[in-house]
Amino acid sequence: MPITNNDNFDFISLIQTQGLDDHIASLRYAGMIQHALLPDHDILGEILKDYFVLFLPRDIVSGDFYYAFCNRQYICIAAGDCTGHGVPGALMSILGISFLNEIFQSKADLKANRILNLMREKVMKALHQTGGRVEAKDSIDIGLCIVERGIEKLQFSGANRPLIMMRDGVMNEFKPDKMTIGIAPLIEQPFTNNVIDILPGDSFYLFSDGFSDQFGEVTDKKFKYKQFKHILESVTGLSMAMQKECLEYSFNEWKGNTRQIDDVLVFGFQF
Image (cartoon, rainbow, N blue to C red; front, side):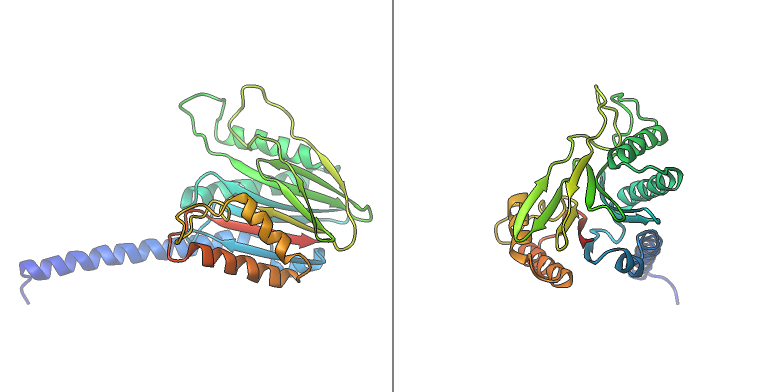
């Protein structure tokens, strides 16, 4: 059958649609690869008393990532938020996971702030960052916790991401350093190592800023960090699985039909 002008238009549309389908298929495959690099839930269940992970990528692949490492002496839990989202963010997240693996497998005496100091050096070196104006400004914000087995203390170090602890219904927030992993500051400072006494029943939360930055369909305003903390307070005492359900419901209710603007990650856990 001869191709008329109308037929030609349909043919081009078909090619464009096929191209879009191929792109989405590639993203989905990349998402499977990224997901394979994240901690296995069976392993998380073995090293943590209870936990949940609310992980909502905006674009199939994510610039947010969560991380776990354990050996006979230490348990490490982390949550990272990379510059951007989608493919660029996912590439940064893979870089972050790779560097954490490299550091943990090469260090015997683990200190949370030293891990972030080393990670910053590796990211800056990999991206050739010297603080110049024209270079890449990609970076990783991260909260990292380390618990030494048999010792009721938790080390926390944060690069722009805090740690929240709930104990007997009371919230304690541990502030991060106002520095990121990457982009050499004018005066480079070491990260702070916070040492926290922990008790049975304490719940901890690491998270990206995607939840609090989401705009609502009704208000056209951001959810905001204060309201996010209020939800965490309201769900305390529930199982981790129920807490995840409540958080996800609250996020979707707020967002409504508005487009999700960023990746969302909330990692709640108990030791």
